[in-house]
Image (cartoon, rainbow, N blue to C red):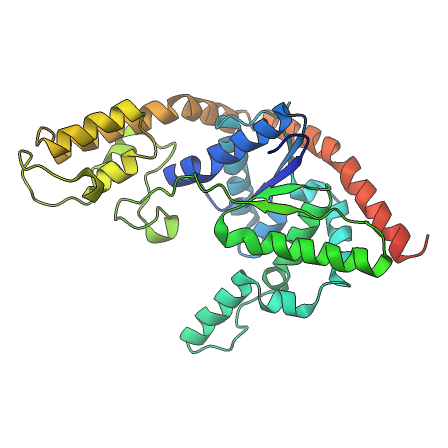
Length: 338
């Protein structure tokens, strides 16, 4: 389905990703991008640092997060020779395109945006004024996102279900502009939701999330990973009591990382009362460490040699800019009658 298509993926630097991010977002995004390139398409992969400053104002912290996310994607298999890998703030055309889009974006689009509505709801629940602490970056977030998408004539944006709205808004803005000038100035993007992407449970059974404090760390030392895994909730049933694997949290997490044969072994052991909770936690630990071993080594290398990553990002920006420049020129020519 990606033959000849341009795919765009953006990732916000929000801190060191965990195992759930890696299995549910990072690896699938890299795989889809490479699949598009292998089928004659293009893949743009960017670090959304402009988006990040809405919440993070400390430049030292922001820079560290940016480094981590860049190195994690490279460690996960992103190939800068295949994908156009760049930093959002290295594309000066993006703020210009955003400014033009503002003039055609109904304010109502921003009012209904999920992130803004969630922030307002949080304020109301706390008894604060609706817009307390909400900056214009957060409020206009979808328009900047639209510029990110529309700048490269993107065909497909892989997203989670909670981000479908961003692509729909970008498409609506493009449609408004195209209709106003009666010409296809902007390409209309589509979203793609991969229903097969794993949603990895955390160690407390909820979705794995830093905000819940229930994560299995990705590139920490083995002892930190072991501590998290051995904190996974279990009950007090003895080993010899047969158990339904689908009711065991360790097994649910194992599903996202184990081979079919490994999953069968754990499932049979639980059903037959041959594996205790300590056994299956060690099985999960071995699987996690084996999965991340090579990636962790690459991550540590790139973090220690970040000048190489900076060069990759600079080369990626140089590849990305011509498409953004062409889009900006089309818009300016139409808007200003040039």
